[in-house]
Length: 564
Ligand SMILES: NC(=[NH2+])NCCC[C@H](N)C(=O)O
Image 1 (cartoon, rainbow, N blue to C red):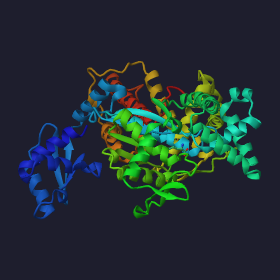
Image 2 (cartoon, rainbow, N blue to C red):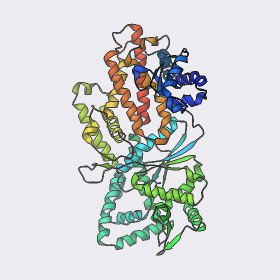
Image 3 (cartoon, helix red, strand yellow):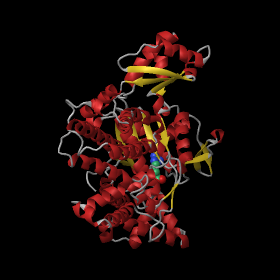
Image 4 (tube, rainbow, N blue to C red):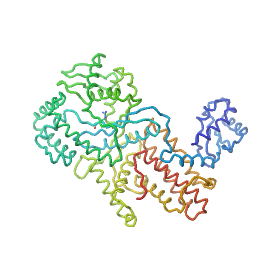
């Protein structure tokens, strides 16, 4: 949005500097102190000969004002510029008015395709905090890419294969119940899994049975596979419901079990590149040279491993989707695993090997429930909703006005979890804190929802309707209005900056700042009671803030509420 003004500044300075306007354009930044100007150029950034301070003064003396860049002044090695504020207001508000829900997005990556692999829980094991983070962050990565014009395939890569499924089958013969499975597959399978693991500690022969069972699965034995397939299908169905609740959906449910020819192809390639070594009957790859240790590719009974399946999956994904980039949203505990995977793809000289990216994140601590250590997503969402519902009930008057309190509690609860997760850089560990997460004060999910709902109420409570035609934007002259406009104007640049770092905290931080600016504006910029033309201009400004806040919230996966 500021580009328009930057361009004029660049063109005005180019002849004075004897530089290409492009070089100057890149050096224009936001002025550090608002009282000094709107935009600024730091002369040292241009790397010219001579004294920056003298240059600044010389150029200021020669500068010819334009319709959009009104004046400038030198401050040490800086030149500060004043821009035509009503013109900025017009550009911003026209754009928001025209684009609404798409305001901020761009199509600069049109034609590029990405796969975002995220969530990826393991069937029959708890969906733990790591999976929750992968789900929330992965959904954001997907949205950020789409907002920059990418075509995105959202993929869930289920942990649905491996010796532990042999163990689970053996356990099911002892402890399984079809009824319990149908009623609640995720809890029941976990229960069976825990029991059989306990048994196996006493009786190691169970592990042999499990190995034999898994061997049968790998050999394609129909009976062995039928049971496993039931577990898988029922679990996916349950996951579906939970993801719906989180407002997340996947284009593809793949999984370790779905990898087929890619593994054989990978093993052949590894062999022909001389990368495979024998070690006590197993096949391994030595990556010590790269400080990545040694990795097992095939066990001595011939069965595959997590890593082997990932190599095979990578090859098959390429064959099927021909992506420009693939993002793996996986906890930093698996940094080594992904380094090994990506290194192996390079060593195989696959021409697409540089298209693989790992987006990692830190641990969550303190997230155990009353029942024990394992936290199931479903349970956690229930608990969150109940707690949120309690908080809401505390305010009886307000509570009475909410149409569907259950749903609102659920949505606000999700926002609480999401925002807590995104309150610091991805890589940071954080402590799961129920208290802080639900607070309406401070930078929390409920606060953002409240800010959005309040903006909606400004529109509801005004007798006017939002319009753009014949609105006098010069009436938005107060500092509070200008600060708000500036911040709205920065949203498109924020969106454009997301790919690369993929830090959701940048969007959440933006949304908080926007909410704070709106809240300061309420104190000085009233709509009701102001003269009609002023009220109309302010209403448009609040409306634009509401659209932008909603867009930022959706970017991080929140569902903006109109009332709460
Ligand atoms: N391609 C991958 N390895 N993705 C990550 C899968 C995560 C794995 N299912 C786990 O829970 O640990």
